[in-house]
Structures are given as C-alpha cells and as structure tokens.
Amino acid sequence: MEIEYGAKVVDKNGKAVGMVDKVLLDKWSGEITKFKVNTGKGEADLLISPDDVLKATPREVKLKIAIDEPHPQMGVEYGAEVVDKNGKLLGKVDYIVSDAWTGESSGFKVNLAGSKDDLIISTDDVLEVTPAKVRLGVTLEELKKSA
Image (tube, rainbow, N blue to C red):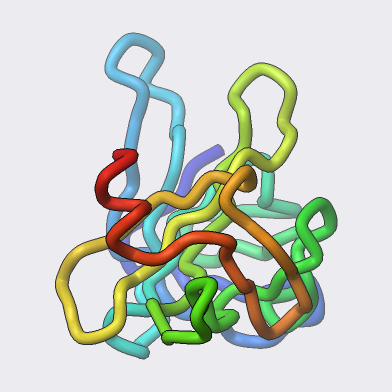
C-alpha cells in the first residue's frame, strides 16, 4: 500500500474525512502500520490502521468504515462523548484500540476536553455504550491512578 502525505481520505460512503497528515512505517519492513488523518477539527484527528482501508492510491484513501456509523465491535462512533461515572464530560473518542493478535477491541483513545493530554481507556472501565456516548464506571482521577 502506498499513501502520500496530503492524500484525501474518504469513508466507505464517499464522505470526506480529511487529509493524510503523517504516515507511520514499520522500521524493518517499511510497511505502513498506521496513518494520521487531519480532519480539520482540531483535536479530532484520527489514527487509522491499514486494516481499515478498502482501497488506496497515493492520492486517495477509501476506508472500510463509515465515520458516522458505530464501530462494529464496540457500538461507538468516532467522536462520541465520553463521560465518567458522575456524568462529567471527559472528552471524545478519537479511535478504537484493537488487540494486535486477535483484532478484538480492547479500548479506545480519548482526546481529553480542555487539555492537550490523551487517555487510553480499557473496555474494562466502560459501563455503558451507545453510538454517540460512552459512560465509564470510574472517574478521571481513578483512571489516572490506575495508569
């Protein structure tokens, strides 16, 4: 797969997602391991795996997923709100984290609201999931203590 910096990225329905901002390569094989998509929404950039690519040319990438549909394993949309057990908004889902061996969802990365920090949240800390919202069974302080 060959993807150039600045390539247009669209979802499976042809909806514009953004532009390739960075390509991460395996240092031994030179193969693409991930690529970052600038969505033009500030902190809402996405880190995409080649496994999520339907078709790629150097100038355009078409994803297997639709950005506005729930993630198939977790049932959550990219950009969904994440709230703690008290209902306090923590941030938004940036991308789903999958186990490298099984492909199963193991958590997700959250862009923390009002901060430059990000947080990886395990599915073990999730209490309830809808496509637009994730409710955790812990507070931000509890998450930081266990990290």
